[in-house]
Figure (tube, rainbow, N blue to C red):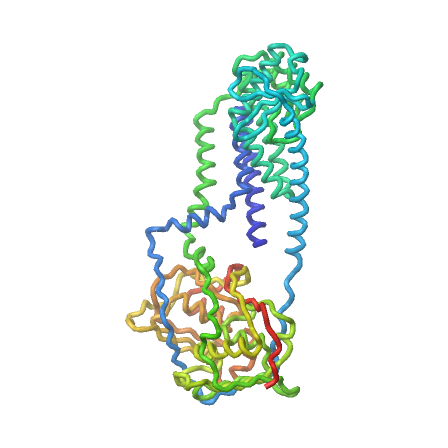
Length: 579
């Protein structure tokens, strides 16, 4: 989230800089044009480019976006029973950084200060408005006479009122008064109070960005110059108009709110000089109109085009809609006999899977058991008391009925990952014995994006098989032979103890493929203990990693990215009772 916010801020700041350069090109044209450009720069802070990119990703209606969700049949060779032994190796999860919370606290303080300041100033203006009395001037909007010493100004956005200080006519000549009133009516016609309110919102939200305050100064300057040009264009005498503005500055205070458009904003000396010169602004020629149109078209359509081009990758990073709820553990199958007790001081982490679905685990933490039961990596588990990563237990369980499937058809380091009946029983056992409660959420985390490498794909043959996908996977040996498998399934396999992070398919490849992959496993990345593959001999892949093998043999690349992935949060866990 923070990375996305930082990206949005620098993009908006860069956009404001580009607008600044464009206004320099148009400095001899009408101020209303420049005011519109600065308003666009302000609004950009409220509209991230990522929003337009996301919209563009939904516009690829001509593409086939259907994805087959195949059932995967694992066909693997092992011996029975299996013994997986290792030294204790289940470290606790590092504490999350406090920097985001600190930054958020600082932002809240700045936001609150801005809101309180604006509120106090608004109360001052509102008090003057409430105490004012109607004044008949035969104008298109209601006019109120105020006893306050605030300058003339337009109050309100939806139903504006012209607020004039009492005795204003006594300080101005008729021509000066008419010019000042015309200036205020220009603010009404241009809806300057609305644009100023938008800028105030941007200032409150992004108070820490100097570009926002730079835009504020430019908006006020061009707003007043635009009204000055309009008043002079109506035929008002420049000298009377300038003297009227100076007189108002002598006797009255500037409005405390930008969204109450007055007459004394911007650099007074510069304004008076510009009014007295009364040099007509140049009309926009065709070249400059085309330049403005091109800039506007690029600013809007470029993110949409990016979204259309990268629609598969963008959609791959989107969270599921909606997230599936966790299955109630009371409805899951159960072990007929199960015991959980503290481990002895000299025991090692060991996982034994015997025929019929019997399960024996020694010296395992609750955190380790949860990862096995729910088929997740270390980054996808959070929360819970500290002891779930420290206290170790021995588990022995026998199912209520023999589990279907022959354990001869599964590899040691995948037997618990893909043997769903055992995982479901383990989920229920943990819920009952540890009073375990979990919440599923989507959270930003480091991931690997599976993308097409430079040079294109290799050895991915469109399958001729019409049956269910068939995967012969010996991850402990570093071998994967697939028939009729799509890229989503390949990404799932690579996530399971091979890369250390969730892998998300961003290839955009549709359909199913036949392929083979061989590599040298890295025991430190396995979701099971480092030497859980002791009973298997690694494949002769020349010592290459899964990352190199994927790129060389399949033409696919694993790119480190930040993205959204499912995570389980432990909301409750209790020490198990003695058996």
